[in-house]
Length: 136
Image (cartoon, rainbow, N blue to C red; front, side, top):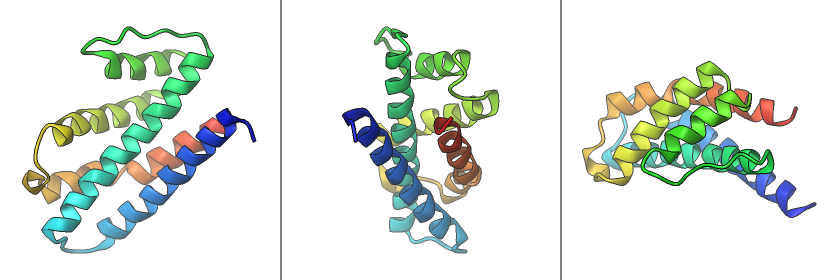
């Protein structure tokens, strides 16, 4: 297995594991504060994993991104332009990107369970669709 294949397969497995954990948490009626923090971290992890795959694919296509304050959003826009993600996936990933920024610059104990559940609801289908498209 090449380094490329290994990286992509590791990211795929990690995203799939995180999705399973998110599904387990969102099936519960009430989450402890620690579970809310875990849910926030898993959402951030999923976004970061998907972004890594997208960045790798764009680099392999020869697409260059300028590392400025908008590079994360530009990465999503370029991936949509190049057919790596759909319009619907773009919208879902943009929501996760905005959350990721807040999560990284805030405190876990300040996370809102209701908002996290809203963010988490479409994530399993988003990830499954994204990963399925990567096999093509």
